[in-house]
Amino acid sequence: MIDLLLALATYQRVVEMLAVGITVLILVASLDDLLVDVWYWLRSLYRWFWIHARFPRLKAETLDAKPERPIAIMVPAWKESEVIQAMLTTSNTLIRYSNYHFFVGVYQNDAETIAEVESAMARFGNVSMSVVPRDGPTSKADCLNVVLAGILSYERRTGTPFLGIALHDSEDVIHPYELKLFNYLLDRMDLIQLPVFSFPRGLHELVAGTYMDEFAEWHSKDLVVREDVTGVVPCAGVSACFSHRAIDALRHQRAGEVFSTTSLTEDYDIAFRLAKMGMREIFVRLPISLVVEAVGPGGMPEITRRSMPVATREFFPEDFRAAYRQRARWLLGIAFQGWTQHGWEGNLGAKYFFLRDRKGLITAPAAILAYFAMFSLLVAHGLFQLLPATERPPYALLDSELYRTLLWVNLILLGNRLAQRTFFTTRIYGIWQGLMAGPRMVVSNLLNFFATLRAAAIFARHKATGKPIVWDKTTHSYPFQIAPDNSLVSSSSTHPGL
Image 1 (cartoon, rainbow, N blue to C red):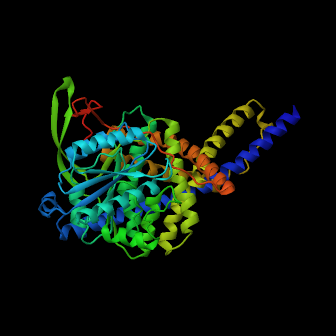
Image 2: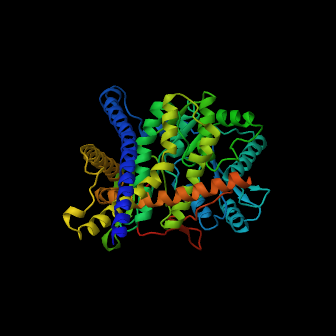
Image 3: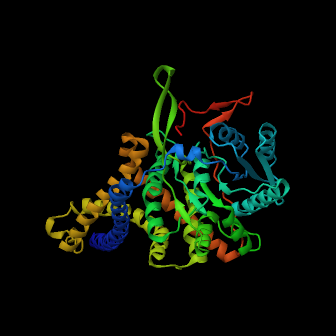
């Protein structure tokens, strides 16, 4: 009995030490987030009372008045037969721009996707296909480089150079005004990144809902602050556009390899390469008022006018395993490969955001350890209540005034974290989704934990064996389907609300 009590007391002390360490780590991470919050809101106040008061905001009418110049759209596709034709059809239906051309990259061993793209080419004159002369999957960058070669060949053949080259995935729903905005900005910008948001999901879809919360905050606040501090805008891989000048410079830099085939997040890598060349990058949040059609109660159509950002919208994974595998790929490219390829280069601001990119390697496991420590302390406390008060081991660390102060500070910072996430989710999706942002943070922590484990294991295996990391794609869904008569049919009960 004495040995058992001694073991429990020892276990309690170990968990106490773990709790203190995690509390300090969470405090540091929370102060980091608070700094970004404060910077964003001070910047917003400045722009509201000084910039917007003196200069008129960009209007849709201004974008419409700009003469259209040719823009290419790259779409890499591996095993995308279920969505690629719907994406091309939807885009040709929605986009309020006429001078553009799709260039879809496919693999020679993906006959189903090739057939769907060929069908789209027969229907639309603005779709071309480039076939990767290797069995897939290789890497997304490899596919994109083949697509870019196809664009260059098209320009030489037709004598029509493109003003800019946009980047999208096969699950993207492109905003009607996206190309008009690119057309307006490309005269003075070399990389333009627009927000990416998830389509609204049900309140019960906790995994898919985490993407609503995270992208609403990241692409409304974090990227804004990063651009302001560093001048670098990490490309999101979709809803982005490069000037022809930028593509040419990248092509000459590495003897034709525009996108780095050694990175799983070639879009993240390319933004830093452009910044080193002195290219101008911008993250744009521009609200445009559009008419949105939806199906109301009783199946009656509802037409409303909403002001929403020019942004790409898509469905993110709703399956837990698919979600953490996708996040693992992001971690591999941004944290592990980004660390290897870019180190800590740049000014203090750049180093700070590199640290934010990579801190998840520590904070993701720490969040799960925090749950474990809390549960362990509760169990230990319950067991010790069975003993006489005089025989219960004291909480030497947790009962200190300093630790209680740390807990209160962390509690206040957690309240701020919940308020920030709730605000940005509410602004895009409404109050009910905003109120779910807090509970979904627990799901996010679990996803990030498993993603970190998977990313670390893959990277360790890659370093040990030297084998390349291949394209670990996510299965995609699309809000529209192609009917037998080649018309578009909504795959949900409501219009996605562009």
